[in-house]
Image (tube, rainbow, N blue to C red; front, side, top):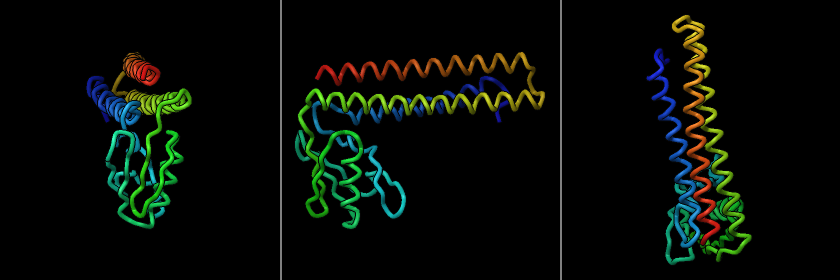
Length: 188
């Protein structure tokens, strides 16, 4: 457990950076012009009794500008892959062709733009929840250190304020990234 503020802050910063990086990868999947494997990489498939990332049950490819394919390695998982992609909330309608799942990328309509915007908001909210979880862990560590009398109550309050400032900075980064993605979705 961290016994000084800089160590605690660097650990919390590293974890919050991870949440921001995850958000960037998820936003990369919300490409609006061309088909991109990142669009369906976050999809999780029911496989062998557990939720498994799509990339661990098949190979994603882009054979043409408006088409994705998933070469499923285990024939028994093809229907699960189709269902997972259909239910992921991106408005995609995959079709199985043997062990190959074809995922046509529809033209962007107003409705499709709204679906993409909603997905972006869901991803951003998930990142905010992750950031708040990191903040909660930091606050708990700070209280535990204070209870052990390793820092004073005044220091504990100051550390808590620093953690809150750090959290606010990261929430602002998420809001800025979301605003940028929203603008990109609506412009295309």
